[in-house]
Amino acid sequence: MLGIFEKIYGRTDEVAVASAPGRVNIIGEHTDYNEGFVLPTPISQQVFVACRKRGDSEVRLYAKDYGESYTFTLGRQVFSEERRWANYVMGVVDAMQRKGLHLGGVDLVIKGDVPQAAGLSSSAALEVATARALVELFDLKVTPVQLAYLGKSAENDFIGLQSGVMDQFCASLGKLGHALLIDCKTNKHRNVKIPEGYSFVAIHTGIRRKLDSSAYNERVQQCRAGVMALQRVNPKIQSLRDASLTDLVKASAGMSEVVYKRCRHVVLENERVLSATAALEINFPAKVGALMFESHKSLREDYDVSCPELDALVDKAFKTGYVLGARLTGAGWGGCTINLMPKSYVAEFVEEVPAWYARATGLVPEVYPV
Image (cartoon, rainbow, N blue to C red; front, top):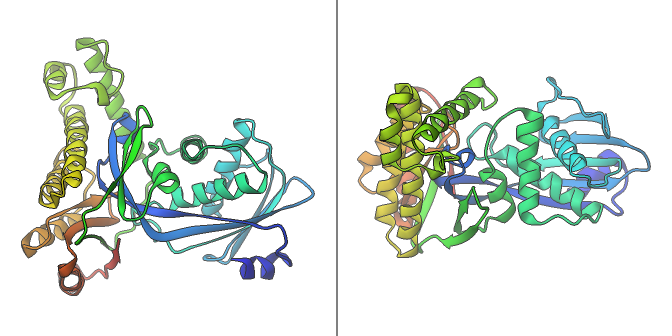
């Protein structure tokens, strides 16, 4: 990073360097913005940010992976259609300023190897790495949980995606080789060790996910409509996290079939996350796998965020006989599946499944051992 920084900006004294990882979500999809439970794990791929103070209020950005630059003035950050990657940095700066954190002008370089538009949370990795670098550079007092929420604010308030805090939480507090159980209502969290002898492998469909489409925010609104209907049955329910399946059945007459299905996924997905965590803690990976298959079915049938390519990969994983569980990971509509298997079968999976998928679809998948 310092070599790249020197090439672009001329010197490397007093440069702060920070990084943050991408993630795969083992189970718990579309539950975070409903104040539910999630169980992601960080991956080894990371985004790196290097920055140095300037003597003015200009922020100069350079994205090595794009070979592109962008400049803005502090307090005047405006969403860019041409340099969409720059919006994540501007969003973090915007969030930090609104929190009253003092920043000055900087020169900043970005580089990373987290696959983009793959459901592996490259955006959250960029947000958290940017926030970490700025916190270090300006000696700011920010906790890891606060750091995650700065990234969430960038997504919600600047980018306009009404996502939850899971991705940024995992980028800020996750530990390699562990799943991170997050309670998105209370921020309570703990790392749970993944059993020895088992691996998660992500495989990309070749379908690039476009998450800033209206479909994601539509799901958020449908869940909110479900909460309003639930409150007429039980006023204590503030989010889908508070609802049981019994509550949902009682309230079903007051909501559309689509809203009911969206809510059913979230309510049952929360239960699956807690069951999967308990299974990990007693070294019962087969149970985790069964819950992953259930999760994918729910995401396909109730939440309607899968696609034929994701379904094909999950079906193939099931038919191998050695994959314990598979599901889409990330918001859906393309991107990756995550697959749980004994480590002894990883090489066979990497040889067998991508080749089958390429023949079946004409698409070229990529495989990311976690």
